[in-house]
Length: 256
Image (cartoon, rainbow, N blue to C red; front, side, top):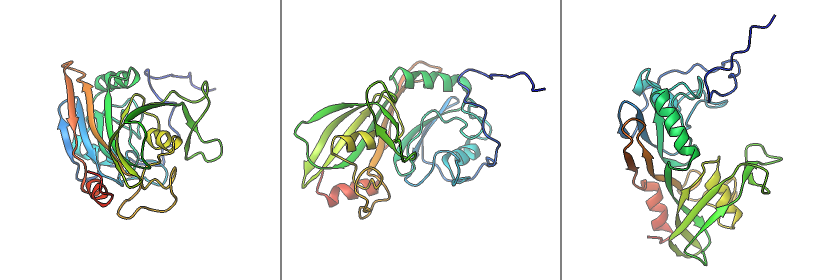
């Protein structure tokens, strides 16, 4: 006899697979840009994985947060992703907002859904643009063959994905752009920019297979985050300056 099925609280993911990862708090330095009783905003460095997964059992942002926040992280996303409302790729740097309780988590998840959680990224891409700005509106899904990759797919399939881009500077076959996300799909900026012929510099998955000198992965930084505070209702903007490796890449390509 099977015990009765308990669907659990709303927004719960399917029951996690048997735990082969023990989440351990680890004293890893964090660049905390803002923190209060409800949220913590972290400026994540390149190379740090957001939460434990096969191949990355520890040393992640979640391990660092468990140590820093003690036992105050929301439990909505299950045991492996406490507090994690949205993610950025391992080799993307910049701002990530983390919920310290379930109320904050639900409020932030709602803002992601209705696109009122505003995220601005800086990127360096291959090629110059004819226009100063534009929008890529193309649904994304897992690549049919390579499941680690995402791909643009036909309308009606995949999940809606919208990226607004604007050129900051362009010369010598490269451009410095900003991207504002309306949706936050896996690899969204990387796939969208590659799909219009402007892959990110250093992106060996969606662009050139050769590494770019001085870069680990793609040249992408989450620079600005605007959200409505879950308790006070105040509209807040948090910023993280461009990291050294990013400004050095701009200098190398003579993009100001």
